[in-house]
Structure formats: C-alpha cells, structure tokens
Image: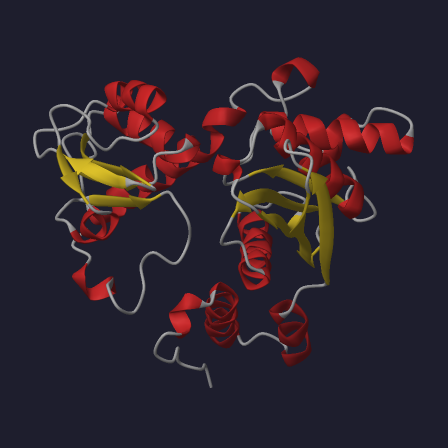
Length: 315
C-alpha cells in the first residue's frame, strides 16, 4: 500500500522522495529487499565548519554530504549553499540524483551536499574559507572514483575550483575529475554553464510534442532567475516563446506582451533583482506560480508546488 501525504507533510522533501519511490516501486513490483535498500541513503555525513569571518570572529557552519546509492558508479550531485538547507532536503536531492543518472543511463550514482549559510551576506574570502573547510571535512567521501560534487544553488565554478584545489593539496597531486562545473581554464567543460537550462529546454520540447503545444508563441513563466532560470528564459526566448513573468528571491515582474530576458539579466546585474524592471508590473512569487501561462518553470528551490497551491496552477 502506497502511503498518502498527510496535510503539511508536503513540506518535507525526503518524505516526498520516499513516497514517489514507493509509488514507482509498487508499479514495478520491485523486489521487497531491493525496495528497502533504495528507500534510504547509503551514507550520511554531517560536519561542523569553524570559519574565521572577516571581523575576526569564528562562526561554525553545518554542512552535509549524502550518498544515496553508488551501485552504478561514483556518486554525482551538487553542493548548495542556502540558509534553509536541511538534512532531509539533501537526502531527497541525493535520491533524485540516483533516479536521474539511472534514467539517462550515465554511469553514476546519486549524491548531494549542502551547507547552512547565507552566501549573500558573506564576503568572497569568507566563502572561500568555509568552502575549503567543507572540502577538507567531506574529503574522505569524495574523489573521481567515489563521489563527484558539482555546483548547485549559490555555488558556482569558483566554488568547485576551491574544492578541487583543497582536494589536490591534501592528496598531493591534481585530480581534475574530483568535481564537475569547474572553470574551463582548469579542465572544466565548455557549455557547463548552460547545461541545466539546455537540458530543461530539451525536455520541454519533447513534452510540447506530446501535448501538441507549439513552443513558438507559448507563454512561459520562470520562478527563480539565477543561472538556470535566467539561461532557460533566454533559451526559450530564442525559440520564440514569450516570457511573461520572471522572479527571484525579492519578488517578480510580469508583462503579458513579453519580457526580454537579456534586458532582465542586465537589469538584475545592476540592481540585484528583477523587481522594478521598466516595462513590467510587480508580481509575487506565489502569484507567478498560479498565473495563466502555457509553461511554468520552477527554477528556484524544490517544494514550491504543494498540496495547498497545486490545484491553482494554471500552466
């Protein structure tokens, strides 16, 4: 029997991941023993990260690295920096990475990492010190043949460069394969910055064929205007879709006639947010999720579509 999600339980990502798995396992008539193995992560590491701040004080951050399953190859999954990171969130993300790598048949397992911090309130030097400490603490778990981190929310190529350098200094030689998403100048891949958004575009194009929707002229709302969301908006606009709403952590903007994503990117680079962008009306993140559009792209954090607003989604 597949359990139902109780009221408010939609707020726990790992519980959702387990229920999703149980539904799939029931459909596949999966062996009960294998089912029990795949419901839970193989390894969970919690670390304390004492970090010297610019004011001379020491602050202790909490970090996680979870390996859900590595039967098909080294763990693969990003590292996110966010004040709302939780262990359950990281466990869920690691499980979803297991399913994603298996679905596209690449020889990796599922893993994920996170640090509870607010990178928007930290200097670059503080982020570097915290990242290097995190890398040294998770070092026993990671490596080209064990577990390969990558960028995620509020981490980027620079973060991966710090991790790679810390790893190399510890083992005594360079190991370019310890992370993906690193700068091209030190062995990173061309196109990595667009990879997530381009993968999304490919999936949506296939979904449009099934739904018999033309991407040309389709209205698109994007919640989350970071690397993935901003790049997705640009790529969809290049396919002649109409971007009718964008948002970031401070709120959003909408224009039924369309928003130029390039202008939105430039405006955010100057102001730090899309809110206030000329030629668009303000909208909240909640309003964006339930506005009328053909395609809704939740490109921020997970769990934005819940039991409480799912029926109101019009995409």
